[in-house]
Image 1: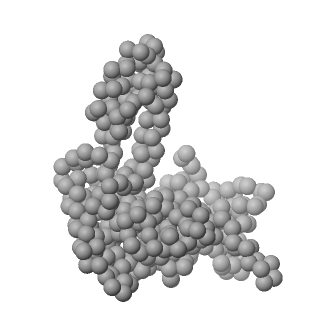
Image 2: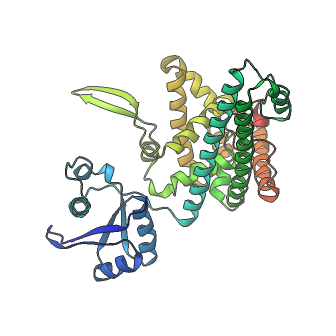
Image 3: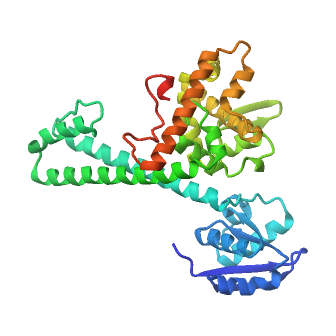
Length: 378
């Protein structure tokens, strides 16, 4: 939704209001108002129009602080919800300190994030369309036996059963299959763009040395992180991922609950999905998983592995170290054949990324996060 006006509050350090003003939401008007306060800190809420203003004002060298109003109790819990009141509360809370800011990503990170999030939404849309096809066919007692119901063999089976459908359901099925084909084409186009960008990023290539992480996953993780240097340590980064448990304490008793789920949900998705691959194809994570699964159960153990993965990623990006080198250094008697296979896999993924960037020829879903058939296919 486009907001055609913005409300601004200028405030002294002691809390006195200098001016409050409602103005048209365009850069000429806003810049004209702010020109008298160029040396001031400017707080903007992270709405769609707010993010646009933030980017444009940064180009003009203003000191910008981007804030999520939902994380400000004075705003989120305020019964009085007006632009004027929210503007006042933002200025007043910032003046008093303690307000957590949102990281403002670089244009490069923003570009990758936009592509990855769109590619992820296409995957969700594709799953929805495929489920509708399955439901339609099942309503006629039709079961597709092909391993991939939407591959060449599967589509031939669907075609052979086409005459069993009613007139209206034939139209629906044809429309759904056309949608699936179009979505797959869009996926290949977006993946080609992501792979092209990824080839120029050392951090993405670094993450691709982790088994289970290809260029799409690596780009997604990095785009949701932004820059690793904004986190003081691995614990703060783990907290950002939302993979740490909530804690409730009473006296000397500390009770841990479900994970906080703070931070980007897509980042958690990538970390958790990768964790499933790591416990199958890496000695380090398989060993850690087996050591805790009897105590915590499968689901909670996967979350624990994802949290360890997050801390591993932090150390890799912070120290510019490949996963292979990191695991080898932690192993008392390293199996060089195992590490050779990891290195070959890493190189294979990079070559595949470059091939996709070059010719956009994706025979399968290159962003599939579920790997089968052993480490060579991971």
